Length: 227
Image 1 (tube, one colour):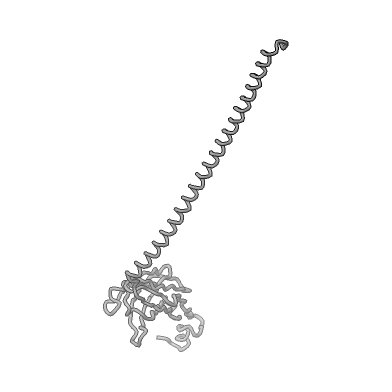
Image 2 (tube, rainbow, N blue to C red):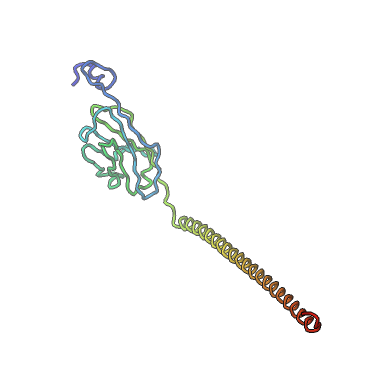
Protein backbone atom coordinates (compact mmCIF):
# COMPACT_ATOMS: atom_id res chain seq x y z
CA UNK A 1 0.00 0.00 0.00
CA UNK A 2 2.82 2.39 0.93
CA UNK A 3 5.99 2.28 -1.19
CA UNK A 4 8.24 3.57 1.56
CA UNK A 5 8.16 3.87 5.35
CA UNK A 6 8.50 7.63 4.91
CA UNK A 7 5.22 7.77 2.99
CA UNK A 8 3.51 5.63 5.64
CA UNK A 9 4.80 7.80 8.46
CA UNK A 10 3.82 10.91 6.53
CA UNK A 11 0.27 9.62 6.26
CA UNK A 12 0.31 8.95 9.99
CA UNK A 13 1.32 12.60 10.54
CA UNK A 14 4.76 11.91 11.93
CA UNK A 15 6.96 13.15 9.07
CA UNK A 16 6.46 15.55 6.20
CA UNK A 17 7.65 14.26 2.83
CA UNK A 18 7.53 16.42 -0.33
CA UNK A 19 4.53 15.56 -2.42
CA UNK A 20 2.75 13.78 0.46
CA UNK A 21 -0.09 15.54 2.35
CA UNK A 22 0.61 15.70 6.04
CA UNK A 23 -2.24 14.61 8.29
CA UNK A 24 -3.47 17.24 10.72
CA UNK A 25 -4.92 16.02 13.99
CA UNK A 26 -8.61 16.54 14.72
CA UNK A 27 -9.66 18.76 17.62
CA UNK A 28 -12.62 17.38 19.56
CA UNK A 29 -14.48 19.16 22.35
CA UNK A 30 -16.85 17.59 24.91
CA UNK A 31 -18.17 18.37 28.38
CA UNK A 32 -16.24 16.75 31.20
CA UNK A 33 -19.34 15.58 33.08
CA UNK A 34 -23.09 15.59 32.48
CA UNK A 35 -25.84 14.82 34.99
CA UNK A 36 -29.32 13.56 34.10
CA UNK A 37 -32.40 12.48 36.02
CA UNK A 38 -33.32 8.83 35.78
CA UNK A 39 -35.82 8.33 32.95
CA UNK A 40 -35.22 11.68 31.24
CA UNK A 41 -33.39 12.72 28.07
CA UNK A 42 -29.81 13.97 27.99
CA UNK A 43 -27.70 15.38 25.16
CA UNK A 44 -24.05 14.37 24.94
CA UNK A 45 -22.42 17.28 23.19
CA UNK A 46 -19.41 16.75 20.95
CA UNK A 47 -18.02 19.33 18.53
CA UNK A 48 -14.90 19.20 16.38
CA UNK A 49 -12.52 21.26 14.27
CA UNK A 50 -10.72 20.13 11.16
CA UNK A 51 -8.24 21.84 8.86
CA UNK A 52 -9.88 20.21 5.87
CA UNK A 53 -13.30 20.82 4.32
CA UNK A 54 -16.13 19.01 6.03
CA UNK A 55 -18.74 16.99 4.16
CA UNK A 56 -21.21 14.25 5.00
CA UNK A 57 -19.18 11.72 3.05
CA UNK A 58 -15.79 12.62 4.56
CA UNK A 59 -16.78 12.66 8.24
CA UNK A 60 -17.26 9.53 10.34
CA UNK A 61 -18.45 9.68 13.95
CA UNK A 62 -18.23 6.86 16.49
CA UNK A 63 -19.63 6.93 20.02
CA UNK A 64 -18.55 4.24 22.48
CA UNK A 65 -19.41 3.52 26.11
CA UNK A 66 -17.32 2.30 29.01
CA UNK A 67 -19.23 1.47 32.23
CA UNK A 68 -18.05 2.73 35.60
CA UNK A 69 -17.67 -0.83 36.79
CA UNK A 70 -15.36 -3.17 34.98
CA UNK A 71 -16.76 -4.20 31.66
CA UNK A 72 -16.10 -4.30 27.93
CA UNK A 73 -16.46 -1.16 25.82
CA UNK A 74 -19.74 -1.00 23.89
CA UNK A 75 -20.72 0.75 20.69
CA UNK A 76 -23.37 3.43 21.21
CA UNK A 77 -23.78 5.13 17.84
CA UNK A 78 -22.18 5.46 14.41
CA UNK A 79 -22.68 8.15 11.77
CA UNK A 80 -21.32 8.48 8.24
CA UNK A 81 -23.56 10.20 5.67
CA UNK A 82 -26.48 8.83 7.65
CA UNK A 83 -27.22 7.76 11.20
CA UNK A 84 -26.68 4.15 12.30
CA UNK A 85 -28.35 3.74 15.70
CA UNK A 86 -27.67 0.56 17.67
CA UNK A 87 -29.82 -2.44 16.77
CA UNK A 88 -29.02 -4.39 19.92
CA UNK A 89 -27.64 -3.94 23.40
CA UNK A 90 -28.51 -1.54 26.20
CA UNK A 91 -28.63 1.52 23.91
CA UNK A 92 -31.11 0.11 21.41
CA UNK A 93 -34.05 2.52 21.15
CA UNK A 94 -32.30 5.08 23.38
CA UNK A 95 -29.55 6.66 21.25
CA UNK A 96 -30.48 9.18 18.54
CA UNK A 97 -28.47 11.57 16.37
CA UNK A 98 -28.71 15.23 17.41
CA UNK A 99 -25.67 16.68 15.65
CA UNK A 100 -25.03 18.58 12.43
CA UNK A 101 -21.94 17.59 10.45
CA UNK A 102 -21.85 20.82 8.42
CA UNK A 103 -21.74 22.77 11.68
CA UNK A 104 -19.05 20.42 13.01
CA UNK A 105 -21.39 19.03 15.63
CA UNK A 106 -21.26 15.29 16.36
CA UNK A 107 -23.61 15.22 19.36
CA UNK A 108 -26.07 12.46 20.23
CA UNK A 109 -29.01 12.27 22.64
CA UNK A 110 -30.02 9.46 24.98
CA UNK A 111 -33.71 8.98 25.77
CA UNK A 112 -35.14 7.61 29.03
CA UNK A 113 -31.73 7.09 30.59
CA UNK A 114 -31.55 4.34 33.28
CA UNK A 115 -28.89 3.95 35.93
CA UNK A 116 -27.09 1.40 33.74
CA UNK A 117 -26.07 4.31 31.47
CA UNK A 118 -23.69 5.60 34.14
CA UNK A 119 -20.22 5.63 32.65
CA UNK A 120 -17.80 7.30 30.24
CA UNK A 121 -18.75 8.04 26.64
CA UNK A 122 -16.10 8.48 23.97
CA UNK A 123 -16.67 10.65 20.90
CA UNK A 124 -14.38 9.82 17.97
CA UNK A 125 -14.51 11.96 14.82
CA UNK A 126 -12.54 11.44 11.61
CA UNK A 127 -12.54 13.75 8.60
CA UNK A 128 -10.35 12.36 5.83
CA UNK A 129 -7.47 12.90 5.64
CA UNK A 130 -7.68 14.02 9.32
CA UNK A 131 -7.76 10.62 10.96
CA UNK A 132 -5.77 11.33 14.11
CA UNK A 133 -6.47 13.26 17.24
CA UNK A 134 -7.43 12.80 20.86
CA UNK A 135 -10.96 11.47 21.33
CA UNK A 136 -13.42 13.44 23.41
CA UNK A 137 -14.75 11.93 26.63
CA UNK A 138 -17.77 12.81 28.74
CA UNK A 139 -18.89 11.13 31.96
CA UNK A 140 -22.63 10.67 32.47
CA UNK A 141 -24.10 10.51 35.96
CA UNK A 142 -27.70 9.32 36.18
CA UNK A 143 -29.34 10.39 39.45
CA UNK A 144 -32.63 9.58 41.17
CA UNK A 145 -35.82 11.33 40.18
CA UNK A 146 -37.18 13.93 42.56
CA UNK A 147 -39.96 12.15 44.44
CA UNK A 148 -43.55 13.44 44.49
CA UNK A 149 -43.33 14.07 48.23
CA UNK A 150 -40.25 16.22 47.73
CA UNK A 151 -42.01 18.12 44.97
CA UNK A 152 -45.01 18.59 47.25
CA UNK A 153 -42.84 19.89 50.07
CA UNK A 154 -41.05 22.24 47.72
CA UNK A 155 -44.33 23.46 46.23
CA UNK A 156 -45.81 23.95 49.71
CA UNK A 157 -42.77 25.90 50.84
CA UNK A 158 -42.90 28.13 47.80
CA UNK A 159 -46.67 28.57 48.13
CA UNK A 160 -46.37 29.38 51.83
CA UNK A 161 -43.68 31.96 51.17
CA UNK A 162 -45.77 33.59 48.44
CA UNK A 163 -48.83 33.61 50.73
CA UNK A 164 -46.86 35.28 53.54
CA UNK A 165 -45.55 37.90 51.16
CA UNK A 166 -49.06 38.57 49.82
CA UNK A 167 -50.48 38.87 53.36
CA UNK A 168 -47.76 41.30 54.40
CA UNK A 169 -48.28 43.28 51.23
CA UNK A 170 -52.03 43.37 51.87
CA UNK A 171 -51.54 44.56 55.45
CA UNK A 172 -49.16 47.26 54.28
CA UNK A 173 -51.66 48.47 51.66
CA UNK A 174 -54.49 48.50 54.25
CA UNK A 175 -52.28 50.45 56.65
CA UNK A 176 -51.44 53.00 54.00
CA UNK A 177 -55.10 53.31 53.00
CA UNK A 178 -56.31 53.75 56.58
CA UNK A 179 -53.49 56.14 57.42
CA UNK A 180 -54.25 58.24 54.37
CA UNK A 181 -57.97 58.42 55.16
CA UNK A 182 -57.31 59.12 58.84
CA UNK A 183 -55.04 61.98 57.88
CA UNK A 184 -57.64 63.31 55.45
CA UNK A 185 -60.37 63.11 58.13
CA UNK A 186 -58.19 64.98 60.61
CA UNK A 187 -57.49 67.67 58.06
CA UNK A 188 -61.22 67.99 57.30
CA UNK A 189 -62.08 68.17 61.00
CA UNK A 190 -59.40 70.80 61.56
CA UNK A 191 -60.71 72.83 58.65
CA UNK A 192 -64.31 72.63 59.92
CA UNK A 193 -63.18 73.60 63.44
CA UNK A 194 -61.33 76.60 62.06
CA UNK A 195 -64.39 77.67 60.08
CA UNK A 196 -66.58 77.30 63.19
CA UNK A 197 -64.23 79.45 65.24
CA UNK A 198 -64.13 82.15 62.57
CA UNK A 199 -67.94 82.10 62.34
CA UNK A 200 -68.27 82.40 66.12
CA UNK A 201 -65.84 85.33 66.17
CA UNK A 202 -67.79 87.11 63.43
CA UNK A 203 -71.07 86.52 65.27
CA UNK A 204 -69.50 87.82 68.52
CA UNK A 205 -68.23 90.96 66.82
CA UNK A 206 -71.64 91.51 65.22
CA UNK A 207 -73.35 91.15 68.61
CA UNK A 208 -70.94 93.61 70.25
CA UNK A 209 -71.54 96.11 67.47
CA UNK A 210 -75.31 95.66 67.79
CA UNK A 211 -75.14 96.24 71.56
CA UNK A 212 -73.14 99.43 71.02
CA UNK A 213 -75.74 100.73 68.59
CA UNK A 214 -78.58 99.93 71.01
CA UNK A 215 -76.84 101.72 73.88
CA UNK A 216 -76.22 104.75 71.71
CA UNK A 217 -79.86 104.85 70.67
CA UNK A 218 -81.13 104.64 74.24
CA UNK A 219 -78.78 107.41 75.32
CA UNK A 220 -80.13 109.68 72.61
CA UNK A 221 -83.71 109.10 73.76
CA UNK A 222 -82.93 109.87 77.41
CA UNK A 223 -80.86 113.05 76.74
CA UNK A 224 -82.97 115.55 74.75
CA UNK A 225 -79.96 117.85 74.29
CA UNK A 226 -78.31 115.26 72.06
CA UNK A 227 -79.34 115.74 68.48
